[in-house]
Length: 453
Ligand code: NAD
Image 1: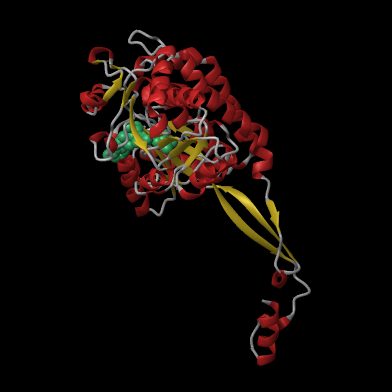
Image 2 (image 1 turned 180 degrees about the horizontal axis):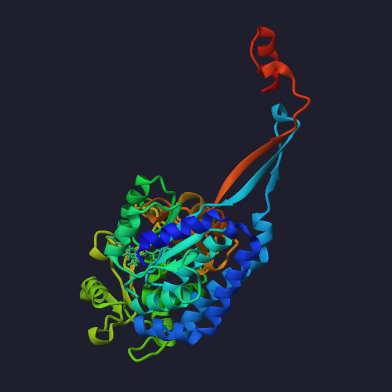
């Protein structure tokens, strides 16, 4: 079926208002949950074929998120969609004011390849919970997971409600010509701009979940063992192909040597060897070659091995890195960790401030003043103090970027709000209203109005 026809069918179906019913939403959320559980092995196989991602990582960083999201929305749907009563100002007495969470209509979700299930299905689940019809366009770069999601959904859901459209740039370009009620995009800043421009043609609201260079800062006041362990985990998870991975390290000069040694120790301990079934591969040749080009042999502190046939790049630390080095000019999105040392903590924060606002930022310290200036001074999507990546596992926190790293957010109630319109309704009584707002006006009325407003 042509995608225009599917969208038209979704429009017609949306008009029937069936998606407004909470029972309808819950039924399909349950259905998706059961399908994911019963097809778990197929989902593991597909992602393993795409880039060797292990069962453990796929469950902990993808499927568990999706299942938690579904459970959260099923449990909280009534509360989230209940009209919220707010106070009514003096001039509108006697009346009541409420905010209704209205579904937006027919929405488009465009996914990225690096966490293909989570980044495609989490927004879809939020869109379903908020009562929308949805077309999902997963990333063609992770071709097997795209196919797995297409068969899971298209064989089990009515296309007029939920549909997976497979395709790459050409198909996405065609999709972007159509008019949606919302576009939720996850991917690069470059493509985010293309999506934003296309959406502007129809005045379609967008959420853009983009990337950037996320710093991790380690001061002499940190618990260095804990910092090293958590940075190594967050950086090399998914072979560094994580939007919120620490992109580069800023380390206080006096502890640099000791700290790099600890990083090396944890890399070894976690066993990211070439034949490890637990270490993810680079997604494709193009990215492999891009990453290898960033490897400055002179600056390798540890690691540096790679194998193109196996799309393997060893977790690598680069030291004596300079802000002008090539590796500091773009988001790395791979298992290379450049380290820059600093003498002055505030100068280090200023250096981060001079760059585009990152999606994430991490600080390792036990000093409360350092924590305070990190939180107050830097602008970033979200982050952690004394950890990496984990902030996005707390669905009480909004997840999204700022500036070049994105606009809008989701997760938990924020996802529901992202796919809802806050419709404001004032309900007035038809009695008891003074005449002063109506013409003909007079000085006396104006003086009363001045007192009232
Ligand atoms: P990408 O921008 O290349 O692709 C994302 C999507 O856009 C894909 O579905 C793709 O088919 C489509 N696309 C690609 N080029 C297009 C074009 N010219 N016109 C229209 N559509 C196009 O991103 P990617 O390589 O899949 O993901 C990597 C990037 O995404 C990194 O920058 C990373 O930081 C970011 N990212 C952000 C988040 C987040 O939650 N903020 C999560 C994961 C990845």
